[in-house]
Image (cartoon, rainbow, N blue to C red; front, side, top):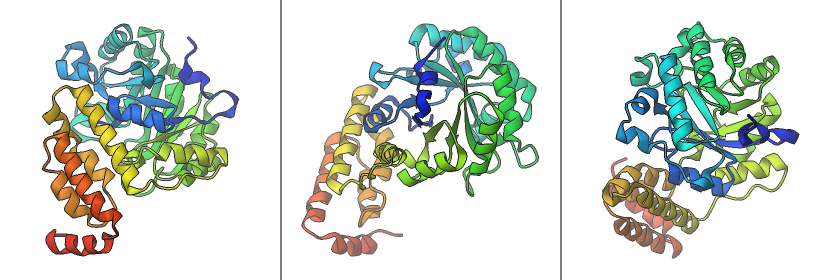
Amino acid sequence: MESSVTTCFDGGFVPLYLAPQAGVSESPFRRLCRRFGADVVVSEFVSAEGIRRQNERTLEYLRFDPEERPIGVQIFGADPPAMAEAAAFVHHAYRPDFIDINFGCPVKKVVKRNGGSGCLRDLDLVGRIIRAVDDATPLPTTVKIRSGFDQESRDPVRIGRVCEDAGARVLTLHPRTRTDMYSGQARWDEIRALKEAVQIPVVGNGDIRSGADASRMRDETGCDGIMIARGSHGNPWLFAQARAALSGEPVPPEPEVDERFQVCLEHAENAIDFGGDGERAVIEFRKHLGWYTKGLPSGKHLRKELFQVTSIEEMREHLSRYLERYLVGEGAEMELQGSATVSV
């Protein structure tokens, strides 16, 4: 079955993906990143067991708006029949553009159940999971992997070939091992090695924090697509900067503080509309407030205030008061005040 997720690589175009990130890649953020230039988005990773049991909170992760397409739903688990059942349900109930399998999550509570990157300890299991999911739906099956479970098992080329042979249509590599977590530098040379070893498209992931990084990854690895994860936090305009750099055009500058706050509030309003429960949505949104205000003068003082808000009105009030002082040139004074009043 042809899909926009496979045809988007046509003609040498390098699509930009928003990575599946628990607690971050919710529908409101996915829509925002699409507006700033993300070509493909992926859901937060979702438990196959939760899907099978029709867990209410789990099913919330599967909702998306038509404007998010092309979108993939990422599932994780270690039991091939359960993964197949979950994939079939997602296809029939939600109709995403593809099903992505998570073999990359390094989080302990996932790995201890042999999910995520835990599966990389058993490549026969990896192959059986992919085949089961691929047989369960007509949608393309894509896979996200790390370079191995640990340094001893580090072999992204072997893992990638297992995935390709089992039916994966696109392969994303984060070139760190599970034991690396997010430390050190991603080994982009492993993305190149994987690209040269398989016939399916390879998407590179890891350490993309600027437009220049995206352009450099493409040039150094020959990857077919680029996935942006932590660099997108509080920074959806990174997609516009990456697209400009890939196209050889001037890279847009970082937004001014007032624009940054406008985007932040748009994101918050969409989160409240999507979540339904305003106070809960605002509380869960606080992490985004931390990212949107990172690097600002007296930012720690501002974040101390923002991490207490329980309504969009309080959020607007704090941001507006900060912006008024910032725009009249009190940035240096704000920094001094913040240093004096906030423990760093």
